Image 1 (tube, rainbow, N blue to C red):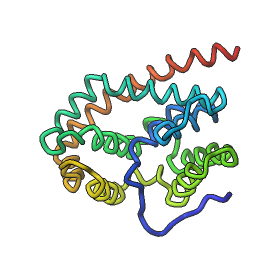
Image 2: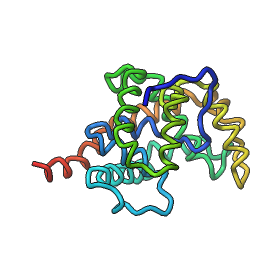
Image 3: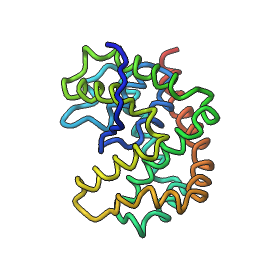
Image 4: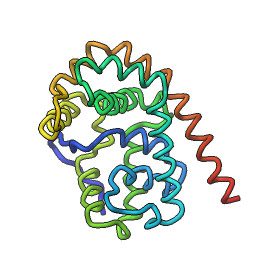
Length: 214
């Protein structure tokens, strides 16, 4: 399959922090797939996947647990809580990926479009083995180039508006971009403190799987 482009801006309302997970799971192809598919699994068992993909799923879950418990993340959520209520963590996930995308080369050493192309190719390597629903999601991800769109606030605004339509409770998603602009300095500072610790924690957790291979 070729990588495709689309003239319009379109990101799914389910998009949360795919970019960060692809960065943190890039060491192995199976880890990249596991990190991508972990949030999309509905009615599937981790045992349905090969060992390397299972490792990627476990890495994803560890990243999420570490993130949820981190004081910098909790402090950032507190900034957004009054405006976005129980959906403040969802808003923050998306905003943190925006901050990552905005300074991607400085934070990762990679140019974002080149990194994204490599991520798509890694995931496409598993395409024949994916369930149809995951193939459809991957097609959409590549067609609309989700990973590159995180740095575009107008693209994220579209995501937030569709999240508003899906939300069961009031989350004021239509004000999420304004929340970021109002609290940009504080949110950026929390991310800057959090990101290197997340990278180090992920590397430490992932090392157990590398040692098992040796």
